[in-house]
Length: 281
Image (cartoon, rainbow, N blue to C red):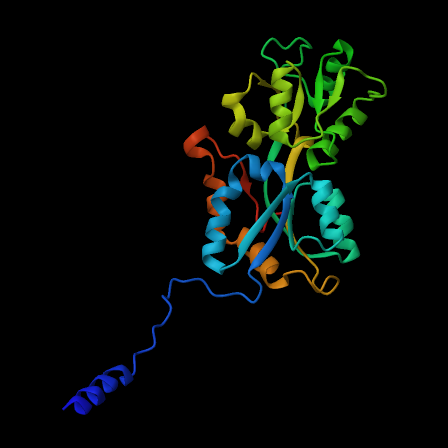
């Protein structure tokens, strides 16, 4: 009887268990899970990536490590194969990487614009002026101007405005560099009652912490255009080509573009970015 019970119990454990299949909603398992995204501080400071990246990770199974630096540094990471995918906003500098074959799948994603902000008192009297005239007035008044000074896309654009304004910054004590991202630079300008050039998205997202007003805006020359691009896996075999391609395609997908267009409306009453996939700017 005991032997019979043992055989019976053993038989119970030998009954085959049906294979449990993964939920159809589960993301696929990529060959290389980690994906390094080098991007600008503005996409992080604005909060946009906090919305987009979780959706991408859930959809693809990749795990994104975001490195927020100035565009110059982000592009340099791409040139060295230290990042898998780039999201930046300095078209002229980006074109060099495209032409050299360092990056591929170069896609237009979105835009917003740069604005000049400063203290409500507007000591340099720049309100309503073009960016070039505003910069001239700041120089003439020797009003404090805080530059990022970090070779970012914003810094590059700022320097181009100074050049158009024909203002020499050599030895200018009123011209100061933060060496930091846009959010920190805005806070510094606010604390010092100074002026700065910023992307609109970061300004709006940080506005509650700032004593700065928009004083110069609307210049066509200050359009702020973002592209996504993957670092070429043929040049850098160690990069995550599969993940980079997936991220680039995700950023221009219709549902992502819709999220970009809606981002900020509920909180700020206006979009912080405008989707541009498939357009020519």
